[in-house]
Image (cartoon, rainbow, N blue to C red; front, top):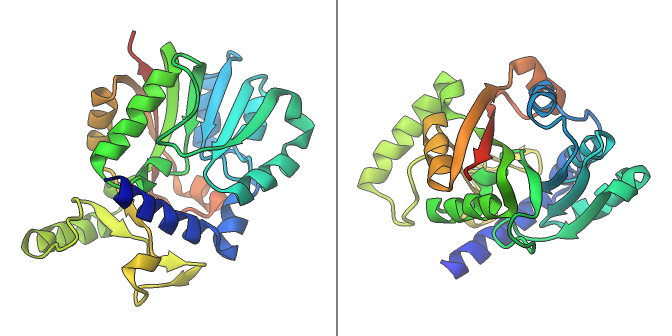
Length: 254
């Protein structure tokens, strides 16, 4: 399992190191989208200590600091942290940046009031047990009653996604030499270009969630779902992410 995670992490690092992905995720331009702003105002308006997991170039960390939160922003990619440091320099008094893996975050239990993990980061963790480990780790870091804002891809948002994964999942019942899980898919684009003919070793594996299954995983990790809010197409046009993202607000149980 450790070797599997290391290989997958290396694939993700290579993918995000391309010019297209660095430009796409290493910026604060565009800011938070409408759904994120709505949920932050509704659930996280009271200033507190926030852990921003997968901060990229600081797109979420900067507005969180401007809202008055004390923000700890982390990312696996040192390139993103350098970009975030430059972009958030004006908010440095309320914002710190660290390099860390989402599966091994170096803070004590009950250290945060809020955790923000958007950009479908949970989808980029291979194997359900490791995704559950990540969610359990976030619950551990939250104080009792603390809130998690997370996002996933959403298979049910488009007919073409439902059809694609229906066919793929059926085929894997017959032939699945790598032991992939239902609703896993390798990325289709590398450095902004179609990459279907590239070896799978060069394309990281993402897991696509169905909302009911992510709510199940949240509950198993110790969270109570409070709200679920899909993005509309106009909001995704602002971010260039397609129209498949869905946001969840969940509370750590006491």
